Amino acid sequence: MGINKQSDIAADIQIGPTDQGMVRIYIEAEGGIELPLDFDPEEAEEIAEELRAAAEAAREMAGSRGKRR
Image (cartoon, rainbow, N blue to C red):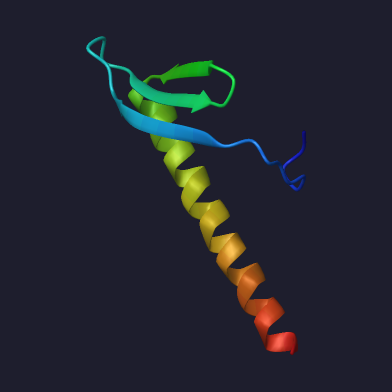
């Protein structure tokens, strides 16, 4: 599945620190799928920066679509 492919799969996401000093992104999807992803704090900060950059790019794309009308 690629970034631009839509899906009907529903999932919940939780993000928080672990007692081992890691940052966990925990994804639970339909069908009993559980996916704990642990990152050291530096990796988590890099992911946060990527999320912010992607959000800004998406905002710009949505804004440019609205201006075409």
